[in-house]
Amino acid sequence: MSIEQYKWKPFDELPLPPVELQVLVALTGRELHGYGIMKKIEKDAGSRVRTGTLHKTLVRMVDKGLVSPCKAPSHASSEDQRRKYYRMTGKGARVKAAELDRLEKLIELGRQHTEPKPGWSY
Image (cartoon, rainbow, N blue to C red; front, side, top):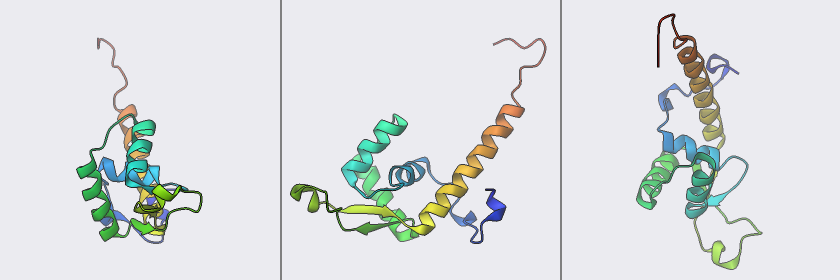
C-alpha cells in the first residue's frame, strides 16, 4: 500500500525517529511493559535503548496518540501486573505502515542510484 492510499495521511508524523519505529514494531500484535519493549527491540533490531530514552519516547508517543497505556495481559505474572503496559493504537499502526512504506521507497531509490559504474572500485 502506498502512502497516497491512506485515508488519513500521517505526514506530520513522518519521518519517525528510529526508536519510535522500533517501539511500534515491538508492540505489533502485543502489549508490553517498558522492559519488555527494550528486550524486544534488542532482540529484533540488535540495538539497545536506554531506560531514560525509552521512557521519554513512550511519553512522546502517548502524547502523539501512537501508543496508549493498557492493562497487563491476563497471562502476566503478579509481578508483571504492577508494571505499566503499552499497546499500539490504530493511529500508531497507520503511522508504522506509512513509515515502512516510505523507507521501502527510499531503499529502492538508493539501490537504483548506487549501481556500480564501469571503472568504479570499492
